[in-house]
Length: 257
Image 1 (cartoon, rainbow, N blue to C red):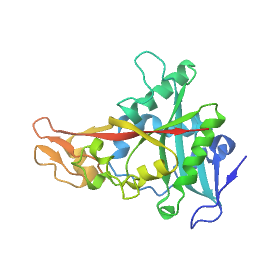
Image 2 (cartoon, rainbow, N blue to C red):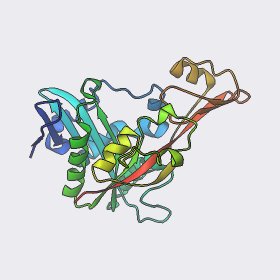
Image 3 (cartoon, one colour):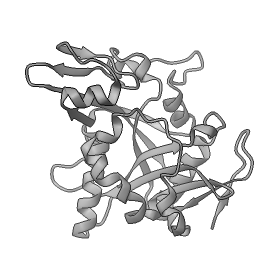
């Protein structure tokens, strides 16, 4: 059943599970996105993320405004009970994405679900669409029989404080006790609980020439380089002609029921 939701400042938005509107599977990336240019070069995501809507449509949601796709929400199931695994691994986003596809290939029944992203078209940012998208993702997870939706969250304002450790950043609160970070605040206001930091949630590595192409920065000195959109500095190594970005995320737990 399609779920039509009244969204602040936006009328006519319809949010559905992709399994209910399979014709939209090939269109979920038809969105004007604001991700930093280096993020698509994360190898795990580059290899697997585009397959998520097709392979896990019952765990994914899409928002449309008429015929226009304006937001997507992607989640994947995995078995957190296998040896060497946990519900909220330190390698966060990348690790659960790999586990999900490995378990699917082996027919392993899932015991947990992790969100991967909610992406809203830039023209629809600021209208409150993230709240019903998150609610729709929780509902999709509940319909699959799970009681919890986990999320390795990428705080949207952390890039403004790249040298602040994530463990300290998540302690920054407003006067009302809610997180200072806007995206963390959405999750907490929606009932989520901040659990812990995923210190190595995704990794982007490349030659110095690649990083110069991705960022238009010189990468001409050893050490930390502040890159627009990066949550922490990128480590540059001239001797070995490489730079590495290891992004921390924040694990949040949502009840799906």
